Length: 231
Image 1 (cartoon, rainbow, N blue to C red):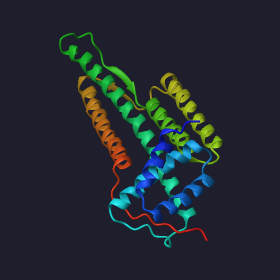
Image 2: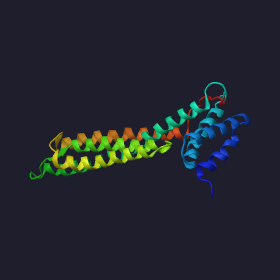
Image 3: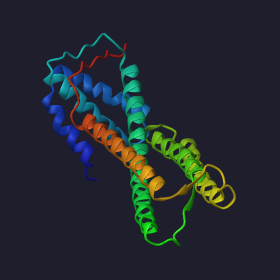
Image 4: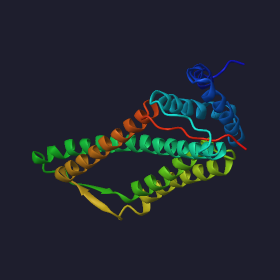
């Protein structure tokens, strides 16, 4: 069986560590195996981990063997990585949603611009409530599914995430049909322009967050990697 890309990357980059660091890294790998269910996930975690170690090495930081336990180090690293991956996915989806809303409000603004010349064009009713339900349960579902990616027992998290996403879709259409009088706005040229500005600002902010997450993944600041041998 051929090695996956993450495994090849780890095996290649680990040679850049010195002998002492390399020995500790292999002990860390065994601990990661004990906490994570699949080889693919282990390799992905080790890829992020080796990047941290190499940055620490470039920053002339020392890998200590007596400051924390290997188990605690791995647990903390996996937990932090899981949170970052979950938030990154939520930001990705939210960014796409903001872009879709921006286009929709831009079209509404374009349509209502003809109202200055054609008196028959009327304001459009727009209910924010269904979109709030879709966002709340949808993002929660995405977060739960992504959070399960590095869990040892993932079924419960995934089921909860998929149920939340299904509820988001059901509540969205239910809100469009029965609760469309809650948080209702009239879309005119002016209100469409205001919503367009807000949606565009959200898109730009989310894009910046996404770039920040990607930058932190690829180029980490020098840090001190600390761990201890298991007793």
